[in-house]
Image 1 (cartoon, helix red, strand yellow):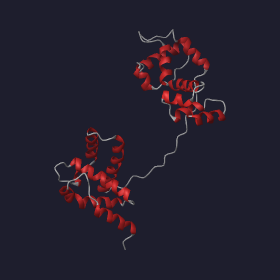
Image 2: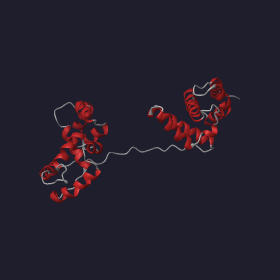
Image 3: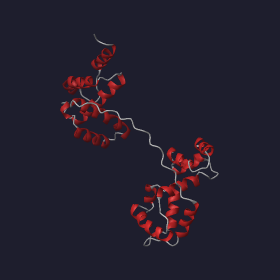
Image 4: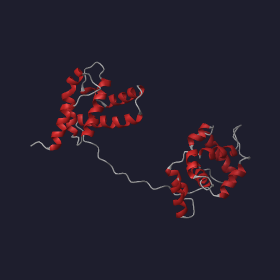
Length: 250
């Protein structure tokens, strides 16, 4: 007895005509392609269309001689396909959808079971540990005393850090890469006896910038803050009510 789902699938497969293959190439590969898609048992027209579209697009790219053959579907081939598509101007967002479908088809072709879905637990936010005002003052006091072989003093580092939220890429863009920052730590700790922790500096900056009388939406836009940034910084305020109010205003 043919179920409704099987009938809908077979009807769609029978009528499918790919855009990525020539008529002769599709005639050559059609039987194998449809059998492979049947193995996955797609449960909807959308899923079936996506699988067929990904596979025929792959074959059209990897079999340019017009003789489409499923033997061309390999793990290495998928990597080369992605590189070729990207070079041809395909968007990463599109390739991010096509690639998993191809990998799924490859596993089916090789007779491998589908990977089990692993439920990931949502990670809790790290404990909020902002730099205290005393520590921040110590940083400022050490600013003129600590210098790096002709590089800017610590004050320049703090100013650059405040502008970019102590983001590593932002600091690197203005000359404060991992090497320079690591070189700065020992000198600073020698003068102040305090440790230099970029995450704690960033927390302090976030709580400070979120405390000013400027619309939070403006601050978020100007500094490129994320929801996670806001959640971390809001935890530095005294009351749950003020934290919630800040997040709502964003």
